[in-house]
Image (cartoon, rainbow, N blue to C red; front, side):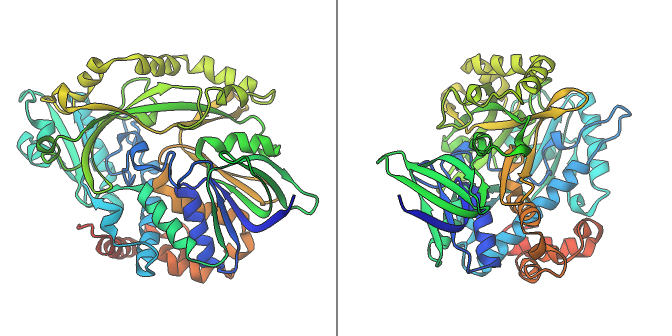
Length: 498
């Protein structure tokens, strides 16, 4: 069998692989780059617009990024980090539009106010403290706050319509928040890549084996899942951007760095409304507080979505427990990922998080009546006949060893790279797609340290693509004038009005 060669092999044709491939082609046009995807189209799994919330996660409205501490203070470090990451993404998209590698922004991003909303006296106090803490920083200085029902009725009429006027309520708003069709962004980037020399997209193909060759290349065995045709490819660098499919491939490769890692899959469902007279009365993403015991990705929100030119409302997500690592995966995914080195961490996490497992099972078993009851916390006058149930994508959280707790469950996004820097993978979930560019810069820094070092050959081009990368790390947070300049430029290019 003929063995083909590629400089860079990316597994999974989602937002992460498309972003990394696009960046690498800009940094070194001579690279040969291949993306292999098990489905018959790109962006078919978690990147698909209907499989994710589409929120440009900038930490404007997501209350779970600003936890209240035991002393009553609000910790906003995570919110600052996520906001910086999304600003990085917006810079890169603005650059790609200027180079005509992405189309006009309305094709994939639309201005949609980001609103945090709570009710009840204690929650209102929390919201005010959160607002005060966040607006001390230029990153959140444009945030508005109100407890006035009349003001909130202007911001989100469906949410306030029919609500008890005596109920204490509060909300924050950033008007230049966004709704993003990450599926479309990915498709456009891959389309642009296919017009460049040295790029190849392989669809309908599974990676069946991944192992190191004697010359430090990765020997990747693939099989077309329709024709059965086999293909072997040698790659100097491999990136696993295959969502929940990344962990099994890391285990298949036998890399030491994944010892003790396991996956905790969480499924999701949405209530979807396409009724025009309802959809047109809501414009924004309204995030509330998660129920006790709920995982972070299950924070309820009522979202305006624009997908394939169609405007709809989504409410959820309703979490559930599943054994699949991918929406198009197998019920045996989780069982087959259990190894002697991760068995104890899995058991420790299972015992310590039994309430979470019970919550997920309860969510999965609830009926339409219970889901509509949850919706009416955000839309009191919601009518059953206007809302249909849709299944979202899979999210696989990370379980890993912990010296004190044997194992721990982590919510977030993590880059794992082998010691020889020839293989990297993205694990975890939220905020996911929104931090794709920042996450891929981390991959580049981990795996191409010489080129990415200060004074390295890639730094000038990287600063051209993402201006903030021309400054020391953290400079965007410390330099208010630079932040305002870059943000305003991004908003102008992307059609988002401050």
